[in-house]
Amino acid sequence: MSHPSLSVLTTHNKTARAISGEKFSVSWKSPSNIALVKYWGKKENQIPLNPSLSMTLSQSYTLTRVTAITDREEKKLKVNADAGHPFIPKMELFLQYIEKEVPILKELSFNVETTNSFPHSTGIASSASGFSAFALCLLSIAEMVSGKNIASGEFFNLASFVSRMGSGSACRSLYGGYSLWGKTDHVQGSSGLFAVPIAKKVHPIFRNLHDAILVISSEPKSLPSTKGHALMDHHPFASARIIQAENNLSETLKALDSGDIERLISVTENEALTLHALIMSSKGGTVLLKPPTVNVILRIREARRKGMPVFFSLDAGPNVHLFYPEKSALEVEQFIRDELVSSCENGLVIFDCCGTGPVLQEI
Ligand code: PMV
Image (cartoon, rainbow, N blue to C red; front, side, top):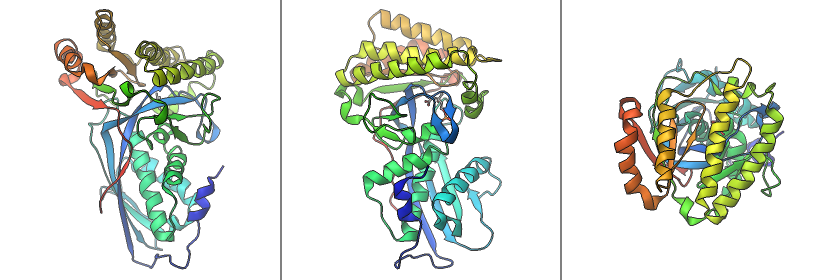
């Protein structure tokens, strides 16, 4: 299914500036996100099996510059000036998809300069920040070449729609605060095709929620996303999971709206542990948690029993996202140094918090 705004970009108008040899360049900074309600399992056309909800990060982002040159010769894609860069196969597939939707991009060769603000394999989704940044750049280039502009709100909706095809979770990175992706009766206008922002329905105490990413291991992912989602295709608990995710989503929305941290803690940790329970109970199931992951989780729960407002999430890996409100930052960061850093690989902790979404960079 196509997006209505794509038709605006499909043809040149009289002011189109695509003259052979002309260069177009744009740069976007786009953040990663961490899901509180997890997307796990998908249908055809990158439609999620269940709705998910994430917090957009601030310090963990990808900075991408795309320079396009009109060139009717063989199409080229280079990443950081390297035509053999390991990201190229995934980016090429994504480019093929977007070029079908926006044919004017077919006339261009691309050089993509991209850097992440965070180290590789740290449990921060580089595909979310990377594909959202790349999609934003390509759409900005399409605007320049076609000489047409899409209104700002529509532009981000379109970027969300398009990024989803690169990586599902990327479609949630287009908005600051919190985003929801997937059709649900709990949110009007929600869709499996793009994410929607839910910032207006978030209590001030969660608008600057902190997330310390405790890097237990920086080994590359042993379960790539595509394989992971496929585990849900014949999972014995799939239908129960879909019902649970809907209920957890409703709980999360109520907790975020009312500022009820106890409610948010309970549902966020349930989602994190459910993700791993689903992974472990899949056919040929695998264990992604490491002994220090479990140790850290138990210490977080112990600290909470003693009154500290801390809770955790996990992605499909061993690293732990530790959440805490801004007002408790001093106390929690001391707890991290005293009790958790020793469980982290080389003591690595990345301090992040809720962010404001992608930013177009000055030329
Ligand atoms: O966007 P993908 O295909 O990398 O999948 C992300 C899946 C999880 O990170 C485990 C959960 C989520 O909702 O981000």
